Length: 103
Image (cartoon, rainbow, N blue to C red; front, side):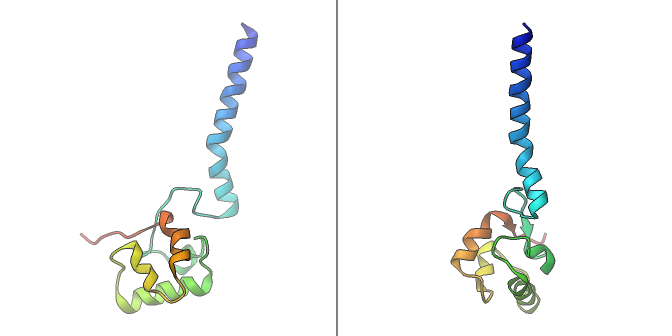
């Protein structure tokens, strides 16, 4: 009976480790892709945008400047209109961005 309890405890610990580790990695590395969080590209600051894979300070500033000059994005695909954001960059970030529609 003690062996079963010990095995159960080990299994439970392993499951907990696998469930918690992506969040811990995401926090320590500062990346968005491991968190399943969508960043609203109409509201995000340049600093927030830098947390996206492949977005450096230059691209983040370009996104904010484009948004200020042209108004809010209507879809996540619209971010490809920003200079420096092509298909490859879009593929890297599309799972982590969102556009909140005005009500």
